Image 1 (spheres, rainbow, N blue to C red):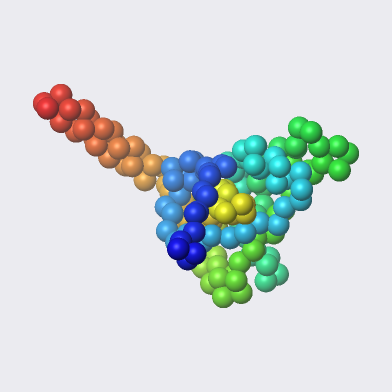
Image 2: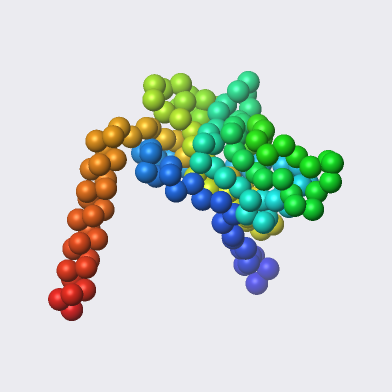
Length: 156
């Protein structure tokens, strides 16, 4: 009975634009180095990942341009909303990400930030940018699927 754990999982922020703007392939779970007020603001879901991306700089992984709003009850020690935050990964994962991002046109995009067993985690995905015609094709396919489902509901 002791080996069964109760996994608490709560999504704090979701980057829905990532699926629309990029082809997402491989995903990695990583921890984040945060200050105290950042943790409290993150638990209040005051995170925005719209323009955020990850990068490997000097053998370390970093989350750049992620916006975590200032904590409402913070004092003068409150954090800056936009700053570089270190991502915690194993060495072999960092090396793999470094190899992947050397390829032309590939980037690391955060897809969501969530709490798992009381720890704040970030999921980053290897992404390749979509062209405008790719986005249109995806929208057309989604619309066709929606219409087919609506027709099936009408017939049933």
